Image (tube, rainbow, N blue to C red):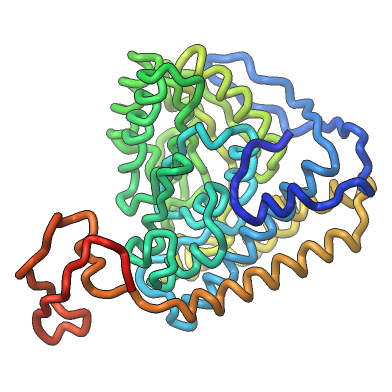
Length: 387
């Protein structure tokens, strides 16, 4: 069944009346897994309409939120860096479906949807993107630095690859405490050649740490195709002495199957690599049109042939789910995202003194540069978050 994916939305989804849905077990074959130094799991998976429906509406919500982020960036409500996740939803949804909140996750700067699956509301996420006080980190972190210690989500990191060794540390903590949990450290193909990744793999293998190294291979590191950056783009084999699997990252059921297998392996034996063959529809970030190094035909072909959300929708319709029920859920999600946009806009900006939070015990007599760059100010310091 679906893993313990948190958040107010999925709590309401879980309460949705499913009695009209078919209850039969659905048996499917996903694309066979390619394996390195390990016998791959079976590509036969089981699911049901209720699980598929929950997956569908969660990924649909991710997509709508990222589309809203695109619009708000172009309207200048979001400034600075902004990396969108649309196209890659099946990777995160499949991972979370095989995990619990006691398992740790750390990722790169493409992290908006991770905050959602780890308990954040759309309003909190958008407010953070807008730099507003109602944001999940009080409007101070922004797009690349979402975080939820309560639900074992450790960021959002702006430095390419910097999160990989942190994931090894999280795995070490799980092992030290005797917990039957894993750490997930996620990175892209653009970070897959970094030395710190191999240092983390080495120490994780030496100490048999319960960690899954998840390479989200969307085939372009910024604007550089994988074949130009890596002598070997078989990233699932690049752990050398630790095993790996290559997974269809556009198929949520394949990702769930591989993650469940990898979690069981990692807890008992130590690190493993999962390479997710996926694709991002937007450019690397909002400043990248995404069409100078790849063709629009390529992007449209991926949307038409491999879209992860449409794949699940087709499964729902072919297994007895009512079209009206799907459309009703889509309307509710669109309204939730639209309402969240307006509520986030209405949230006040954080006071200047919040920039000092978690940096100074007492910032008395300290000065900071004014946001308008017209001199220095001395904001009143208050150790509490008060407006």
